[in-house]
Amino acid sequence: MGSNIHSSTLTDPEIWANLDDRMRTGDEDRWLSSRYAPLAERRALVALYAFCWELARVRLVVSEPALGAIRFQWWRDALQEIGDGETPRAHDVVGALVDMIAAEAYSLSSLLEIVDAYEDSFETGDRSVEPETQIALLAAGVFGKDHGWTEAITTLAPHVAALRRGETVGLGPQVERAPTVIRPAIAHFRLRRRYADKKMSGPLARRFCVMRAISSGKV
Image (cartoon, rainbow, N blue to C red; front, top):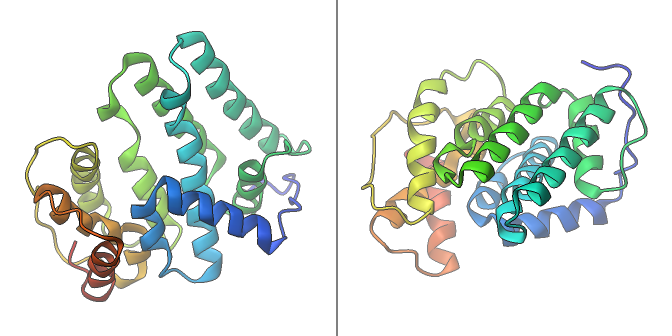
């Protein structure tokens, strides 16, 4: 897509390392899964998750609707500028997205839909409408479109998100083993077992849980 999209200058490994560190702090669950992806796909996941984290944290840093609208519009405009082939804004996440959109890891329109969904959640105060399913589907799509697990992701993602928010919803649906190719995108779903049992123990236990999902496909 988009031969008119400028390639970014985000080639410094230190910049990618900074994004990676940010995700390890902001969304460790997804970060743990992404560790098992090859470098190109891992960067696509990190860029996507860093983008979503910027949108998700709007509710944490502002409370007034007008201020929230300004922040969401900033990201909407930044994406539109990428699509129009304009020089990208000086923001590390924007630069990462330029690279990934140019590489066709995901589409500009899908990212715009995520902005809209997060804004809807912010305006209504309803976190259940955050785009957890869309994020998981985009992440899986980084590894290929015909993975055959779309229905399972659609079923599981909202449930996993509810558990991560601390809601008491039980373990949730059982699904077939995840295809090997997409496991780095969804292995963190297995952590729902620990969320449901209120057993969010130390970092080693979390890492072992994700590693089990990668090796077995059981989430």
